[in-house]
Length: 89
Image (cartoon, rainbow, N blue to C red; front, side):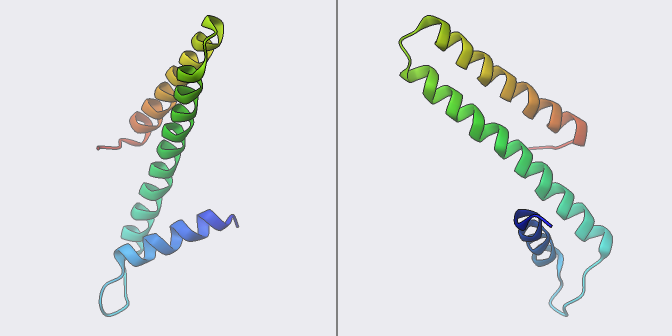
């Protein structure tokens, strides 16, 4: 299993575990899914920031347009993830 998935599973466990050490499986599943979706949206934000940085640093009109399209694509993917999973921010 991917190391990041393991970390998210541990975060989900920590978030829903009661003081007596027990947790409800449905609460864990919900929290784990929430963390995965948030991670995907965060990746879109990170990639968008890279495109933005390249666009701001470029003097070439074609490159600026290409990077702007990359930013727009990241925004669109993030929006689709948010809508698909019903995320409320």
